[in-house]
Length: 240
Image (cartoon, rainbow, N blue to C red; front, side):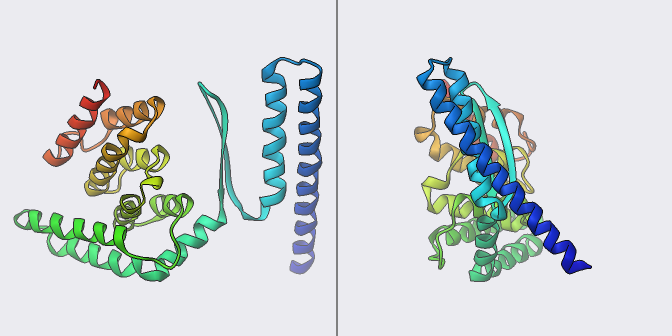
């Protein structure tokens, strides 16, 4: 019975994929027709957007883990998360990062007394720097880092930001804002704000506004002077 159900589910998936493919091609064709027939710009752009999205679903459906649409001032955009990010995150965990996570957690718990705060910060920051400089077998992509930041432990999330420190191309608002607004620890928030400050010159105006909004709404607002200094520096850059 289980094998029959599995076969039926596979057939349903294939029907869905081919349906998405057919409708996607139809939407792209409608977009081309719209251009030639002088439709309004939103009309034919919408056809191209829907067609392209459906073709992506048809081709990559077995690897898609989530799909979300987002409307903004610049139009509608789609975020597609694929299993490749999950698989790479697992590979990173098997490639040495877990030993660093264990070291980070050990330091955090053993030096929890306020008397050892400075030593704890220095050692934990050294581990973040270690992640940024370690030559892993595969260079992590944004999807893998995003998975670590979403599903990892407090220690994993901080160390995942080390990848952003080592690769400026990963310093995107999509990765930084959640660690500023919804961190698992103060150290995660600190490193996210530090990275945001470093990435500021490369950000466009919309991304800068999102960072500023996150800093203004962040938790741990007055709990740490180091984060307070960083926050003040970011807010000051807004008007510069």
